[in-house]
Image (cartoon, rainbow, N blue to C red; front, top):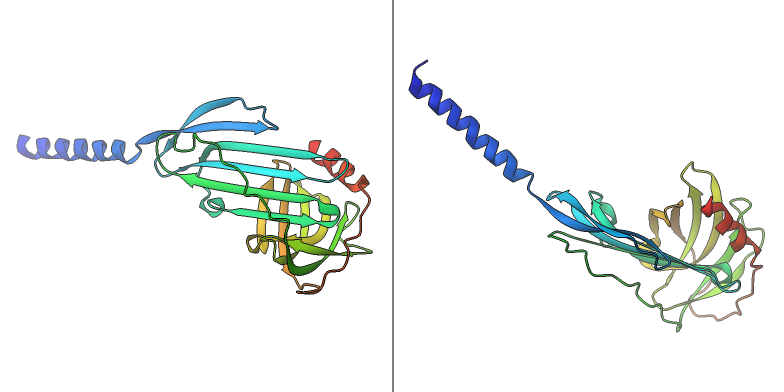
Length: 223
């Protein structure tokens, strides 16, 4: 092989090496794990093939007035969760809310995101409602009048990371919760599917369910 051929080969290797370096160009994403406004923050470096993300989740109940908020930011390669937003209201007004946004660019997820407020205006849809932390059944149900954008009836199961049962319930939800399978509060996998409505125009009174299951639920997901 002559010097000309050797030089051409070396040049080819050099060009491909430069292209390889360019192909893994990276940018920074703001990285945060924040629960109830305790927010230690940093930055993480991501490859350009990976998105930055911002996510906020909220569990809210009536008495004993529990309100858990988890905010997270960082790098993600999971495109399935990008743009996901849902809200669910189960028996006794236990509310699950979630919002996730993705972006591409240097620290493009720096700004905080907020959950969309849910209108309290009754929308005419009525769903079976219950809440159980003992097994995946509801011996009794009430009828829940749905509000705002929650126009679907859902059945919900929450399990921990080992697929052990945490809670089961029924209630109202947004359309986006009809085929749901997502990690919630870094503690459990929440799955939901749509079920038939009780009515689309009646207005029976919502009956209260005991608050004890909420306390048991929070004890489980905090372990």
